[in-house]
Image (cartoon, rainbow, N blue to C red):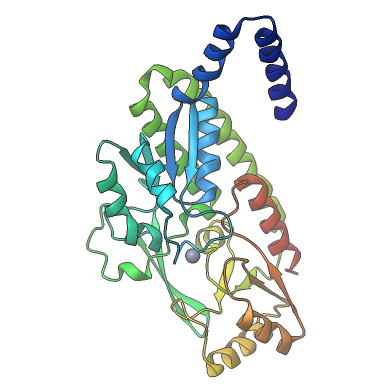
Length: 317
Ligand SMILES: [Zn+2]
């Protein structure tokens, strides 16, 4: 669709050029990029939020590219150059309670220093953060934090993967909307219309996912990197984690996980393309199950969430 449109425009421009209206063609050409609000986001799902709300008035750049691991990624010089030209940076996590993805913990101060005029939007404002304690891979305690709770005693324990709940995605999109209105108040109505449409889309996504898990008796998933905490809380699922505090489990840990998988009648171990699948395969091998890859970092957020939810639901009785 888009390519066809570009082609038509290009053809029209060529016709103008051939007929000698080159001044006109140049106007068409330069009007496009300079007007856009340059928005930087940390991870790909936020790019969908920013593009849905910003529409054709924004140009969005992702810092941690698809397939890269946000816990370890370092930006390229070209990306830092992009930062210096941006009007908005939408971070995932809150600086207030010391949480956030490692990329932001390591780079946010440097990024702000490169471009002090840039508006930094905290996408998580209004989100309830959760810290989970695990015992042998099983969640045993949940603690909630918000921006009023700045004395979080164990900020490292706070789960940064807030975007993986459609209701959190709504809050994040609203925060990005407010940032856009702040940077470009003239187009407030346009952004509001886009926001409302996307919130409806997220509402429908939430309802569709709820229906997928309705009637499931065994709502347990076992994943390598425990990314799906907020998702699991929204839909009443117990998320078992193979990784122990960000590391591969010990041989003893794997043994305990195999017992847990048997206890909960788990047949599928979920892993992600951004992380190692070694211990997921070890557990799956022992229980006669399989490893299924699901990504938490796809840019096509709504579509990917449906896909992952279907994979989770399909693994349950
Ligand atoms: Zn993660």
